[in-house]
Image (cartoon, one colour):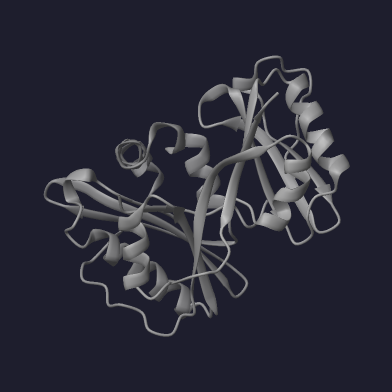
Length: 255
């Protein structure tokens, strides 16, 4: 499967009404510490599963993790899953009873040799979101596919974002979201329709993202993918990404 996802590198404070009893209707809550943030909200349409997204230059203190758990329990969630995080950022969560749900490869592109783009791609617009979500559901396992909220989050995750679609006479074949924060690039999401795999769409989407990022002065670009996703791993390596010696962990636990 040609797909990829990376965690959100930036975030903002979002107000929260603690009196809301329905977790599916819960607005997001952001907790901060010196050097990082953690955002809490429902997980992609699973109303009893919380999503804990972490962005950190400094790993979260144990008391912040404990506060996150208290808020999620109070909001009625039964389980929690985290964003992909580094082993160092995972330690406080493991100490709080979290376990690894999934391990991910982390790859880096140094923006030296970028493959050419073979097709003209289309700018993604809000009117395209329903079709993008349908494709995403086909491309990813059920628990990991986007809903409208997480698609919006991915498009807002970085100060600069590129949203491109691959379309032919059969309709939408692929889409990619890439982003830039300073001189750091991210390939946020890449999905290819199952009927269009091995047609070069994945390579074109990656090449377009890398070319856009390099034009904006990015020094390196990161992407991650699941350990069992050999097709995506090969795609990224063929496009010049190098696998880093450490990966990322998605953690989870019951509440």
